Length: 129
Image 1 (tube, rainbow, N blue to C red):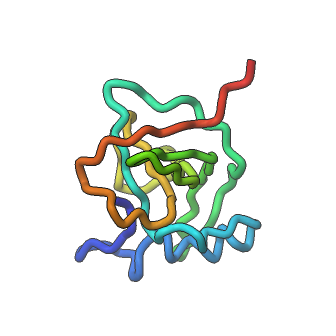
Image 2: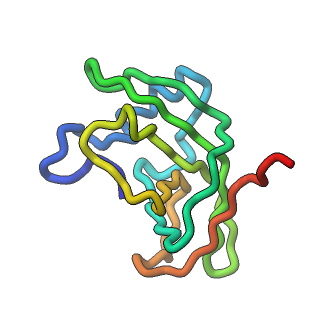
């Protein structure tokens, strides 16, 4: 989970909570989502190329400026669909914390019955023909 709430995190209150006003100023409201990401490892597969609805740089913490891509995504768990966003900080602008290339970070509403080892299906937008 990416929330920045670890004891040694330099981001008080969590990264998503800190970034939310900056996304909102660009027309992307994150209020409907839990203020952290659900990290899903798709291994052995890699995620498709993103088809972002948002692709911009944000200066969100002091002088820290990152490029973020947000792509619509759906997650199915226990027969229920949950709509959200694939949250992809550009590795070229993201300081210090890196994910494996098979991991996607998803912004979703809180899913109360989702155990850490849950089997889920993740749907990405279709690629252009």
